Length: 204
Image (cartoon, rainbow, N blue to C red; front, side, top):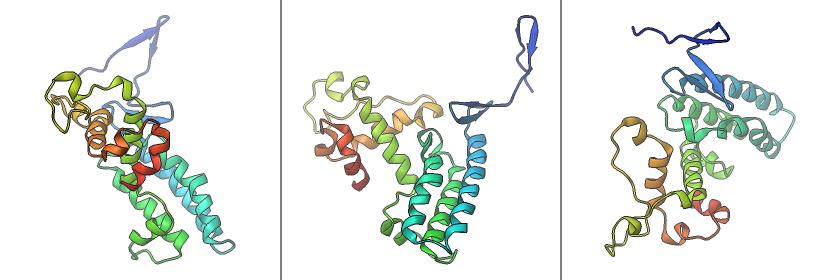
């Protein structure tokens, strides 16, 4: 086991922590989001309890409002950082549990129609949507293929993706986002106002 780093400030030793919270996102010493997912699961379970407590006294419409107010709010925050983590499937299960509560169906009923009827994105789709919107909002910082070479190909207006030397960069939202964005329809990719295209991203 490698020696732990030592740090001092004004002759006082700073204790070593294996995890920290930065801008609302928990990270461990390996810069992994498993710690955040654990904390998020706890918050979402509390939200599930609140939603379930209201099922006997209110309508599905109000429950959907509660979902966005106390569940989706936590689910969406920082999703581009942890949404592709293998542990995120635990959060997806909690999301499906929330929809079953709103739809008042059993735990073994498929959620496919519930997501459609309630107009709620699944966690994987939410991750894709947020990543693509983030890439689109940083358009000026990205290079297109036509800036790299002068070949007149159908992909000349696509973002230029780099060779990934590390797994960290390969799984980064920048690399994943550019590849996802390049798969969109040209009418959406070339939209001048990316804010008006969010609904298009959802429906692609």
